[in-house]
Length: 347
Image: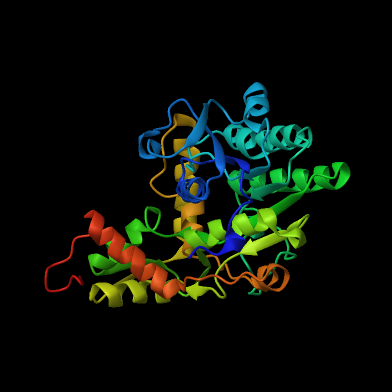
């Protein structure tokens, strides 16, 4: 039975930005199944075929188009703002600003005009904290964004917090940890490495990673939209604790039954090479083969104290990282994206 604390009130109307993305699509589906009237913004080039059986009102265009935003927010009670440009090193900086900052400003100003508006849930990222020198960190930890994606995410959330304080707009800001779950593809290459029995590591492979299952994260979004104690707050949403990269590899390796050999690479030369490729490739609109942000996944510590969401809202993730990573391992097998010999595959 569905937990009632993860449901919007009957008859609610909600706007979801980024609904065609991994996390947004999971949230949109949950809301539709609850009977919520879902409005979603999609670019003209977005593929909506996967959503053909969902009762969603689609509005085509750019999320930073003022007239489009006015139309999308009309009569809305809740906004879940998680849209982001596809994160590539070759992407222009202005694209990040328009989506992370300008769209946030337009949505907030439009929401303030709606008489029955209840909550603006703004999705940022733990990346605004950068490398965690003394883990675990919490919501008040120093801010060190490392690239334009994180810088504009931070600019958007800081503007929103200030605007909400001044105008009385009810908001909640969520900084998710690394999001995973069925249909997620960003971790696929690591699973492929494990299936091939070799994994590259930078340094000793013990950098800390913090995750959150997409089912838990989207439940938290709904809770943050309805809980009275969430108004005006910033939450880091993640599993109870982080895990080392090598531990993640070990979980996948055990599930697939594939012994793994680690191939070590030094960090300093790789980061220098990544910087070189970015300088050369970005002006040409070419995705660099390696770049600083991707390398950071294998070197930076991302470890957080996530107790605030429990203490203030009573939220506890239902999925353990170990079981969730195994679930994803099996899902990749089921899709045919990972190939194992019959003697190794677990069915």
